[in-house]
Image (cartoon, rainbow, N blue to C red; front, side, top):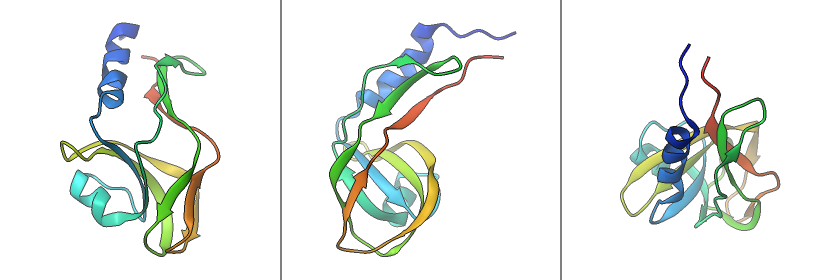
Amino acid sequence: MTILSTDILDAGLQAIRDAASPVLHLCSQEPASYAEAESYSLGTKTAPTIGAQGNRSGGGRKIEIATFTDGEIDATGTATHWALVDAATSRLLATLPVPEPQVVTAGNPLSLTSAIEIGFAPAT
């Protein structure tokens, strides 16, 4: 059985929290790079609030991106994924699917009504 200490898991999550210029993108498909996150972006939230490391339900460790109401939809399309990037270093930090794909329209506000969890499941 593999066991990773909380310190190791937290170090990975801290690297995300330490991003110099975090931007959350709402994307039309899952990006595999920073360039793709920018290309697939339908909307953005600059400098989202990223919480401290904590225990994940069911085990492991997590951070959460807090809810917000002040993002911007820049393009019309169907949103399927979130991508968190560090614009200062052109790095893709994390991607995850939205709970339910939805059509968004350019010019509308972008809001997040439930926190986004990014984390590590427990080792098995």
